[in-house]
Length: 145
Image 1 (cartoon, rainbow, N blue to C red):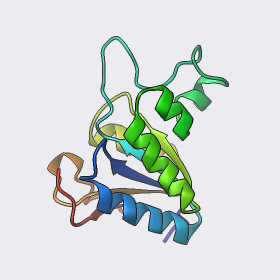
Image 2 (image 1 turned 135 degrees about the horizontal axis):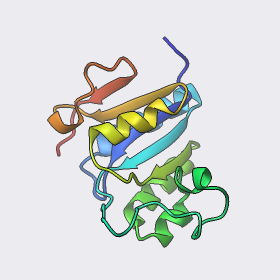
Image 3 (image 1 turned 135 degrees about the vertical axis):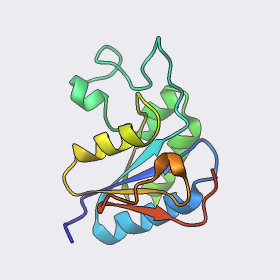
């Protein structure tokens, strides 16, 4: 099994994905991996990308369009995700939020493909997020959508 360096977990603005987050925090702690919480509820607008632009965030577009700290999530109106990231950090995890510019399975898989040693955690039984054919992904039972 390849070394896990990043755990990417589906989460939302409420607690319906709490088992996925809990499993992801445990996995990130065990593997000493970075945790990225994928906000599946992040609103997608044709007029505005959910991630900060190069104009609204320090650093390059690559830095700004990727991982967001709790303060950045708060500033962009994603209070619930900011709290989830802060909670994971409080447990000793290098945790970040991610606000995708697209919804569903494909953006999640494309994002994970860019990261070496990525492990994807999704809720079990969610047809829209089915990753059963991916060896670098797993479904976490006990989650409703």
